[in-house]
Image (cartoon, rainbow, N blue to C red; front, side, top):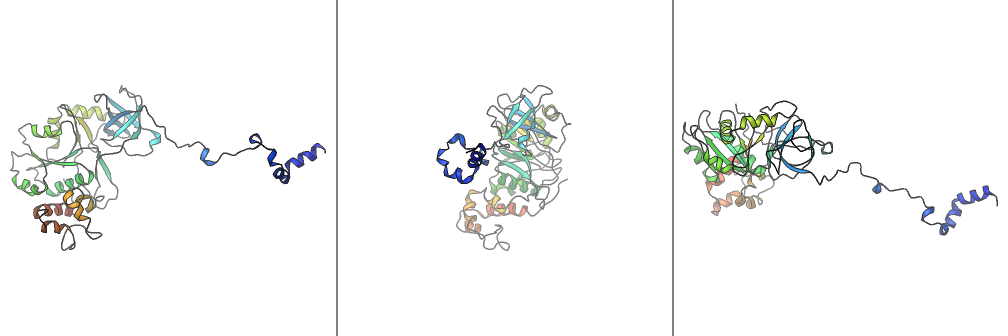
Length: 350
């Protein structure tokens, strides 16, 4: 048989099928399946990443305090593999690259750890876009003046709702008690078991300082209530610290961003920008009731879609049963429902 005949016989599919037992692995050409191809989008683990906390944000640059040396501030950018993952003040992150904190150096944020709490707001009650203001704060200090300007209970209620829904412990801080008595406002929140600190313009805020030590606390308030004065007293170098945090290569700090400031006694105070509105479009009635353990279980028995406001809006709300059995006082239920009603009472604050 000639060479051409042998080549044809070797290429003949019937012959190959008949002589398959003569083949071994070296005679078989295997095409790799899709599962064996390298994953081009697989992220590196970055096991050597340095853990830090974000303390400032300014136009695509993040200022981070390294865990093993909080006084060392590292400027970082978001790594390409992070995409558009949001990174906010209070976030616990992993850093790689140059983490020395020296001038003109830049590290990379390669991961954001799971958040323990989140303070969110929307521009108004119709805005579907949530804005995360602070992550991982343990408590929300709601600053309200007793006079000049007059206290806005609607603002306080909305901040309480955001705190309860986001997993933060609320703390009400009433300023300017040298101008007006706090008694009336305190009575309005007595049934909520809300911790309160009262300060004066002519005295140091010692009690507030003690409640902030070794904790990450966010301070929030609208214009004129004295929040900036408190921050400057709590953090003597606040103005200098804000300058350091904000000078991160793309411009100076503006009042549109939060900034975390280290407390001399330990802990962090997050100075949030003065706000003109506090939307709650992202919060449901169940988010609020869920913050009250004694009422959460009963609320689960309510009809679907119940807003927990009681009659006439929700005549079959089961929370009324708690009052009937003595498990909740009428005042406490009324306070809770006032918070629920605040979701539908959007207003702007000058």
